[in-house]
Image (cartoon, rainbow, N blue to C red):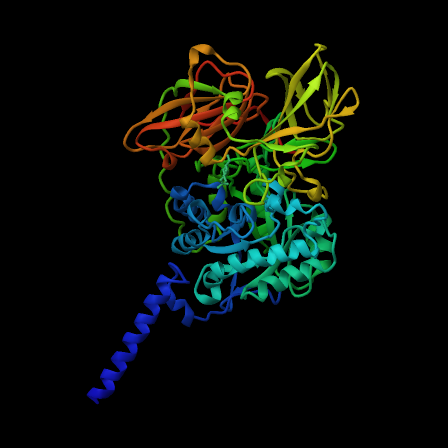
Length: 631
Ligand SMILES: *[C@@H]1O[C@H](CO)[C@@H](O)[C@H](O)[C@H]1NC(C)=O
């Protein structure tokens, strides 16, 4: 008997040791016991969703981990739960997770595993939307720009260059999520196959390829597709639940969905609670009562719903996307979206009215609404010094030399991955002056200089300018900004940036360029500290870095930078890119997460393209610009 017990104890010990080792290695922080769990996940066999054989209604909300500071993930999720939601929906951005081919990043704000665990702890199910294309007003719809180094690339098709890259990415991503599936004891109840493919539909085999890529790597939960009404018929695939996206409910929508797949539960995958903004436009708002009445209509029909967005957050860095239909329009830094929670996670009337409505769909009272996250003002940023871009170029090492222009993605930088974001400066020697013409080859806009003196700007609309006639040789400098790659529509394959072809002086193409790649990453910004800065009395014009100190107390809180008087550029906090500003609006403040501030002195670096403002100060609320109702 005793020996038997000892043997059992030894076995248990061995098992424990195995689990401990597992938990420290491949499975990371995941509860190793999930290896022994098997639950029945979400089913969609008839008109009602079943989870573990019990009927459920999905009350979902979208929130993207990569748009929200890690320190606030739990707060936002608790606010979701307190609003009556039971499900969180997130995209996965390939371009952030694989910034260089084969170099992966799942750390910090990209730690999807931790994000999923927090969701599980808060008590939310998760619908995962791993793409690889995600749209989402995100640069190139989440696809890495290095894919475009191949001049024959056909994104979102079974073109080999695309499928191989997708498989290599899924080889990294999918093993990180399989242990978070519902059947394994995790929160993921469904996984979306691609995103709105019906509106693109360039390759009839592509959706099957993505589906197989997911399933063959261990995705077991219910699969979904997600399309707007126009894309619905072309976006569905066999054995995958079709869901629908809209803002205004049309009576025909549900019967149309039923004509495509009958006797299935209805899920409105993206119910658009607001809308995004582009530079030069207004801040979009969507009427709260219209939103509530539509959500109510959907629920009365017995359908499930996911609010896109429930909490939009911020397009930190250079990550905002663009649209290009009749006109190119790039998206702003804020992704507030006029959602139920603001960009900084505060409550709105949408939140409270939604909570009232959703409380009727719960037997138990909803959890209390979490307290507000305090906001602070820290007064003015003490601006101290400046550094002209021209001085930086003189010391950034050798530029790339090329007879013809090279687009950003194909520049020989970043270990063969090209330049993804930011600015590129193209310099050529000219003789005399005359008409300078871009023939549409500047993506997306550029300031043009002769011997560092600005002679004007060019973009999609303004493609020519006059170079003053001066006899002799001078340097022509073209500072091109990538304003964001298109994230929706059929122009994805043509989203190369910088100079994408010849530019002309007096109808002769310029030749023999010096090219400076200025992606302004954290290493670059921190490296500026070793340069010779001037004091501000010199009052510089033109593209210049400015630096100042933002002093905060021992418990930094969220705040906003008011960019009043500044014209156009980018702001960095301790080297981290907070996003762009532009005086054409609508957005006038930049969100500064308290968790990104250090107690004491913080370094603010601004890259201003034209002329600095008089001052820069912090405020305790955002101003996203004049508003316009979405129609
Ligand atoms: C950051 O940019 C510099 C060029 O300024 C480049 O040498 C470096 O490789 C970049 N780092 C990363 C992580 O991309």
